[in-house]
Length: 320
Image 1 (cartoon, helix red, strand yellow):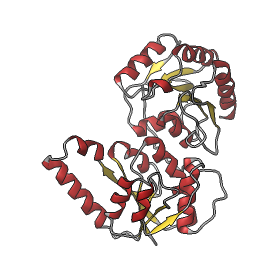
Image 2: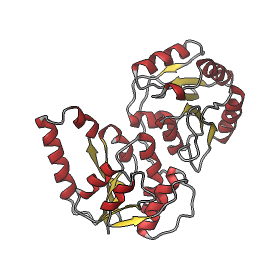
Image 3: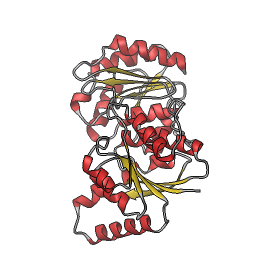
Image 4: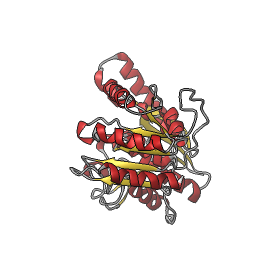
């Protein structure tokens, strides 16, 4: 039995993209135990995968705000102890950054990662014991799967399987009947899909008997969600959600339509039909990807129109 440490600190979408590699590993090398170092705000996500034994929170974003504080020094020392104690057989740096490579070295075990031509920051590869070349033009999910397959010597011959086990949760504020989730919120204004488009899409969903649920993550996003909900019959603005609650909401939806955001990838991960809308980026390497229904529409500077999104949404409803 091997005991492994995975270093994949952030972001939300990147963390989700790493999950199928864990499923592959669990199938190919049963008995392997795996711990995961991850930015504390995303710690709920690895806990949803049965192959993860322990999640070790990493708080660099918070530590940077008060680097000289006694609490920061205490937490960094605690992290060092947590990484050094278990006696890992190997560390996998699936992020390929200098900061992730430095964290990986703290475990005191051999580190495997991308080679200098494949890593996002080539200098990271200098600290690895074992390097693997994986083409950069592949989707992020396939890159992670190939890194693990190369490190543990097995073949990949199945569609990506995120392997999440989302617990049942009571979300009493949800619509009583069937619903769709509209992910209108994104951290960048240029990734937003125009509000009239959301209204037109929501009205078509309502005509199909589906209530629309609108999650949000920040105060401006909440205001936007409430403004849109006023234009749609039976629409519900979700309360602030933790990631496990969000996973449950998405898993029970008939269909999810969203802009380029982490929750769209989470919808794909829980095998709900998802239509992802791209307005300011290209989906080739980081679009939604799943063995279930997952469609990417639009590209940088070329958002899809309502008719195109609706046609894909109808196909998603039929696939559920």
